[in-house]
Length: 321
Image (cartoon, rainbow, N blue to C red):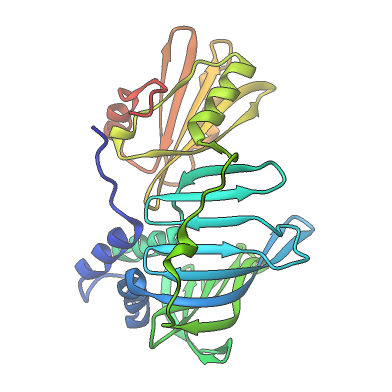
């Protein structure tokens, strides 16, 4: 039987509730409210999302409907994503692509970053400082600002929260030298209105439903890898997969998630030097490598070595069970 997953919102809220006054860095009250109110937020809005990839900047607008655990995202006419629809609940994210008539299913990822921030705050990471800054008016609403910095004072994130509802109305991310790398900002925000529940139904007759397991099977078949994955009984779900090059050799990479936690599973042919995979281990990430039936497997995650070894025992034929 598949073990039920703790939702990101529940996970983050548990961290905030358990935080003590002496925890460092301190968790600002407005951030506590944002996490605690998340399961109950209801709104309609337009937001602009921006990412920087090297010299390229990707900017687009989204139309968002939110009712508690349910979210629907559409894209306006003229957008390169026009016609695509995303519907997400606490467990699944379903993304419709009209050009291919395909619905892709993935684990939910809403508030993943907020849950990660709460975990870092609770654990008292020495690399982070969380403070308050002056708010801004965003989409016509006053906000309070949460600033996330490293110990030297370099700002990593600026988060703007509407204090009555606890909604994140604006977020800016920066690289280690202060350059912006991503952001979102609401340009229109209407809280607490009634939203038709039928908006959160995503189904289309004739559309092909594609799961991460389907993609993994296709990659394995096309590239000569074994269809092996981490069982969902581990509490982790397959999010996406791809072929990477490591030292000129092809490696199958699988990314798993459990709330804000991530694991990477690599499968390589026996000729690939397993030590090369250690380059994927950074900061607090640990690595466990083993061989099976002519293939080398490497599991990477921010968990203990013992936990990685336990998880490795749950890697087997891709049944999804």
